[in-house]
Image (cartoon, rainbow, N blue to C red; front, side):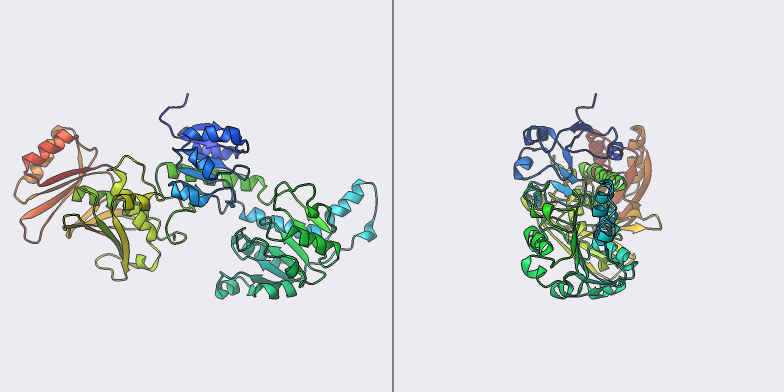
Length: 533
């Protein structure tokens, strides 16, 4: 029987067995048919996470039915069936598996193209009917053709690389890609009218948005070459289905390969179902064993991270500016830890915090570190789970003003983070940290302008007291009597030499009664215990 305290993970669609293996025994796993709305809504009532594919719709109604929900995980790339703004408003993390099926999708576009170019499905159908109609099927070569790639994202780039191997000339339309990046890929950027006019083959690799819906309609198809082959294995609705069917019937388009539709499955009156010279597949772009395995395991890992409140690399609604760079990710736990230490040292939540980044790290977008700091500031002082999604709203609710700054000036370290805090009484506090050595060990290097060099991990005790001999001995004796071992310790004086801060890394936090006794025995002005993250 599952432990009642375990988070509930609701599996709304069939996932690879490997995803269940990743989740393991840490969760109360439940199952529901996500396409059955009447079953889905009540099942969401207890869910902390829900894992879906394309058949389950997580809209505002579904989100409202899930008061405990912390994460929606889509085992795939598209998020057409998830109301991301509504999830963000409720503090629910949305994750997907952006890398899971990119190879599979690119390969399927190639497969559709080859099937259309050589009329393979139609030829097979005649053979299956006992006919030999070799002269009926006259295909076209791919070599030496101009291939237009509409959308040069991850999948578009993979498709371009693969089709280039057929000795083709690759052009692309992507208004968001820098020309230098396209040149590095061996692709020439052009505008959409030029691509439509010059391409012998057009393959679409765009998401479905308000801007891309109906991007290629009757007016656009009127400009293409009559021998053009058109492939869409991206999203339904990017090509006007009726316009494409008409162009095929009139011979203004030579052939098409389509894997996606405005409505899925397509209704019986969909014009593409009866169009000539077309190859249709039932949204198979992600349908390989390898892709499903990657998607399931990726979102399962994300769910585990999200339910721990950790940073999730594949989150789509974290309020940070763009993807988090690899060189920034190791600093996220440190920023959170510094936030925890700051609240402990200050004894209260600050009114204002500036997250200052110094050194080489300043070259990267470090917005996420501000959210990590907020997670640490509130993590041990409020009952609500603090995530990277609800951190901004929690800060606003508690009157915390948050900002960031960066400078290339390094100081004593190649890179470092400082949390500068202004308290409601007008006083200020600060804590700083760095990552040290080849193993990127998190170090506490400053508290209130006093130098330290101590590992920031584990359980910590922080004492502020008037400097005098014997304090360390007294504290050590009381901890030893209680069976608490000191793993590391450091004392730093004010410049005046009259006051000190002691930081101890211990193998377990003492209880509140012992903390009070230790503080009283050394006349500490403050003593705080900081639990391990």
